[in-house]
View 1: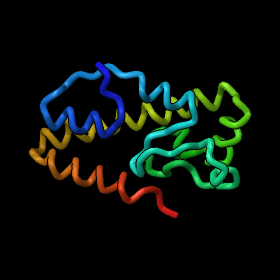
View 2: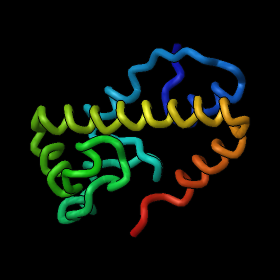
View 3: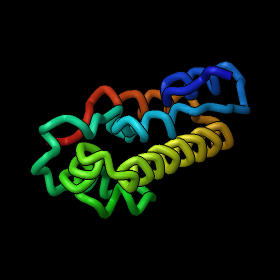
View 4: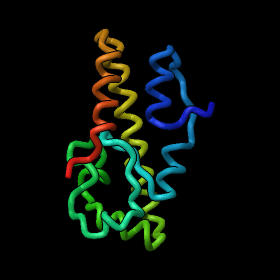
Length: 128
């Protein structure tokens, strides 16, 4: 369907779309990109080489809340298949959590609040 980024999905849901088919989370993961509640991150960037923090300690995904950014960076830079697999897992888990949040917000009648909070997190970026 061509809808791919988390922002595309949020905006489509806002307009009533309720079914998606997208390669974005897997393609991005294979190329060192991840989506998080802080926005998009590129694990190829050198700034992650010595960063021992996990991607997101609050994530539901073990690959995001356990492995260090440095380790994931190393896997990506070394072109290890495991890196592509773990980043894809991070992305798919984020998309699942995003969709669960959207469904819950719709059920609670607070979709616009959820969207605003989500976009604020992306704009704020990852904590230092």
